[in-house]
Length: 517
Ligand SMILES: [Zn+2]
Image (cartoon, rainbow, N blue to C red):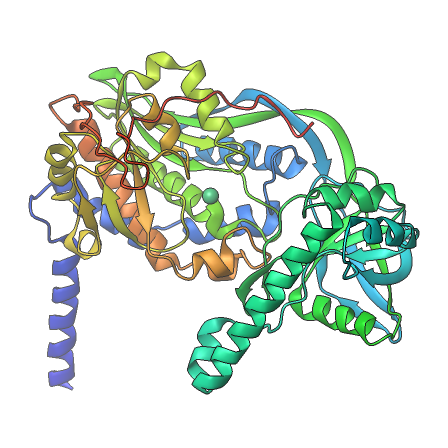
């Protein structure tokens, strides 16, 4: 008993010790760690944002609801926040999507309507399903085209397997894995060549099918993992387009090939809402000594709507909100002003942050540092100097204050090269502001959660998110307290090995202020 007790005490001491160990002792850091671990609000925030508000597609009422929710949350923490309009977007609201196989048997199918396309009546559309034919040329395709009238058309290639490659690698014989890959490549090649022969490409064929009187289109954009599809927007103007999960899509496809004449029923009850205003939510803890200089915590607020946008970018949003809460509690009178920027419409091209950069040159000129997080739930493992010549000097100094159990995962890269896109830090960096991306460990982000129907609360790894909260809060504190204003001097960029030309610093781009038309 005593022995167990002693080792428990040692274990506690060790954990306690490592969690506050850092290269330089900054008294507030251990309070930040304590607050993040003992009074975390992450789980509640995640529930309210992902489960209750749901996905945050630009132009939807849910996006606006999220903006209002964030302002209210900040209010509860006594932090000033506001929604700042930067443009407008085609308003659209997802309704019920229900898809059933009704012939040759009954089965409810997994799929969803794609964003910004017309819905159906309550009755829905019920029709026979057909697939694109193999044709020798565009004349043959034109001759076939009238057959789509009144039919539901499958427009994606049938996948050979619903098992991801890692699963084949683990269990298949080498020969059968190789054979599957060779067959898959051949099918893909034939699919693309056949598409060329129709005289259309995968985008323009949609208009042709719609024009020819198709009742609805069904695509399936497999994300190369079990049960996971990517969900974007549709291109049809008058008829619904749905994305169907690989498993069901391949089954219906086989039914067509075997002559079973499958019929499906689609109910998709979306609503058009006209043009609606779009916002960034901006929260502020006012600086006391240098209020005109800014530390910005940055994460886009919008999402695609196949899932609930949990890791893209619910988790980045939570990191910044929770870091703000902790900073307000422990560091209510910062030297510099600390802003949180929750940007709108990142997914359509960094629109909210580009608008902010355009609308607030006085802030952008005086950014001390910006930290953006937007690649999933994982703990931060990479920090690049982004092409700022002296970033090594200040970023490493700030990182030295971060507890080693957080900083030990981070690989730094100096001076790095400036990112031209990918997420909102790029909007600021293009304008010359020292803006940095906190890059996360993947947790199978690209296949399983990024823009998929599986980007949901259950994928959040709260301990990693908490790790990122501590990191962000400490970096924000250090950047705010720094006696020096950060240098913006840029490196001379290297030659691009692909083109042989000298790389140039990215330049600011204007946002799309009237989107989705
Ligand atoms: Zn994102």
